[in-house]
Length: 359
Image (cartoon, rainbow, N blue to C red):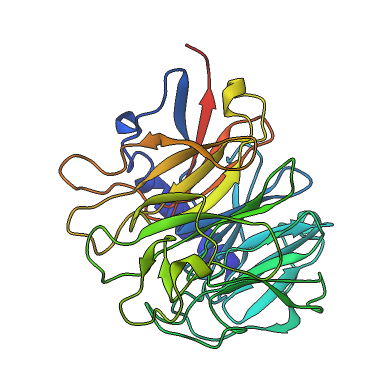
């Protein structure tokens, strides 16, 4: 099965290269973008291995391993259910698969003959509506796993849905870290304060301009961010508001209505100019039901020393042209060992590399 899929990838590569007109991507002065790999269909979450392997999840069933320069792509798992999230720890790769987390043990020693995925005992809901999961290990050594709302808007069971959980590496000791989280598909930790930051997708069907997607910060375990009562800090839900918005933690930043904010990372590299250090980069997948499309870009968030919003701006754009044509959908961002920024694109099946070359 793996060899068959690799053959398909080779065929895909012959047509995919150049599918995204990178000359249309606009970046700040001194930056350039290039294709790191065009052989990663449905590319979503990304994680680095200890030996420089780039692991990439997908929504279509495959998990990929890319060489450090992107020149070689292997399928290391397939036939999984929406394995969007990948997380690496102590030689093992953890992969989300809707209701399960599976582990590929000592994976970088077995890339050509990958081991059978081992299931952890922890089980999650089986619904696929917001059921795909970005996962990551926190500075506390625990695996963080989100469980989205199984709907656009509803009031699901509080401890089982619409929250962000964490557990030990063996699947034990599960607890809820944050409540009222409709659908987070990206989170990260501040490199200095170690606080957890996450994006959250706002509900649909309140019109083009409501509500905004959110950037949130967790300051204490068990914090509630409002769903389904309140959205974006100040939009009371017309169907489910049982408490005022003042009862919940407001977002640090409103990211725009329906931009579909997914992957988010702090910039910890040294290649970019100093003013980018500890900024947040956010992959905006793009709107699906807005009359005028929005998103399809990478945003930049600058913070004050106290964690409040200083400035937000667009860092990379052009996957959505002025005529509303879409050529790519950013899904995740990841800082590379050399300080460049990788961007996954599940529409083009590509990983891009953004580097700073100077003015």
